[in-house]
Image 1: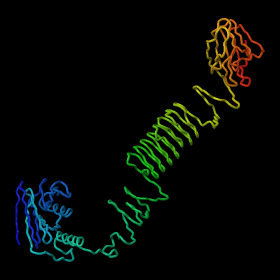
Image 2: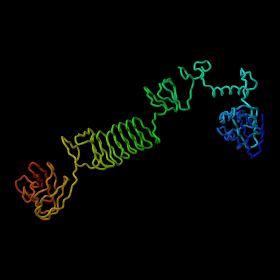
Image 3: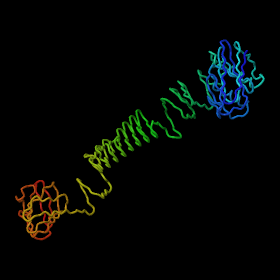
Image 4: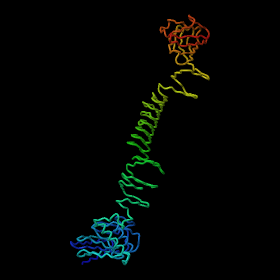
Length: 488
């Protein structure tokens, strides 16, 4: 047997190595001083360092004395064995050994003054007699080493498994037979359970039977659940975008703070899409089958759709805002807007019923009243001025859309031969002033357009000299003439 003893000094790296074709090589590491941070140990090119924590490449230096340091050294190598393989053993209270297999080799070095390295070789395999019972062995270190060596050898070299029904493993989880597993169990790795009844965990294609069980931070694939009740935080189906969820076949979001619910539902940033084929644009909401605000910002569609733009609302099946009609609303089935800043209520075939009071503070235009209409209050007609009357004959005078019209302009005699024709039932209050004499020509050919002519009701022309004079006119489409009622 050969022995080599090498003592290391600070800042000096020394390398010792040994190899034999039919020998076992043993490296003894004797801790002579408490190691300090940055001291190293290199075994078979694997470098490990003394620092303040235990890890794959570091020893813990949080204890003082050579004995505790040797314990930390042993525990670290036991937790992260060197390749070789190398067998780890205690050699003394402040020394450990690493032994190769037959024909193996070791190369090692240290930095600092914390240890000495001794390399020895044995000609042939070295075996030991196992003592039994283990608890009767002298010294706790010997008992621990023997028990650990026996388990390590069985784990490394045995080709046989312990029988699942054996008494020796009756307290372990049975991998092949039915078994009741009591107590709390925590699964931290990726676990797959096939055709099993399982309380808690990560499960794939399994039958899950749970009673008052709780599964935390688990990934469950293809889960089918009936009569489920949620407790605590709400259910989520997160997307890859922040604060976004998607529920349903092919449901998808394309931005943060969005939610898509229903088959093929799609939602953009800050959008909400709910229903089959619903689509929500940025900061918009789409509800119901086919609801679409995909090209709109700050919009709402319930069964309806809006085009590109912003701040629009479409409610009802077929309700639509087809153009970029910003700040518009289409309310009711098939309601369709025609311009910006418009509220379209229903379609042409609808009847709108307001059983209460309709208060309109703005203007009302292009309205057709049918049936019985009761005006229980004052009805005011804003006047319109037409100063274009000329002395002599006046034809095709335009009364316009105002009921109350003020005519002026002539200074001597104004002859009114006709007013521009309007629709059946149109009526006006016409006030004429300024002329010395005004004459209404009865069905006169002076106005070349027959539909503009006036029937005075007297069968003749009517003249008046008072100023102003008020005329009441309405249009009769049956005779295509204006009809006069004179108040003078």
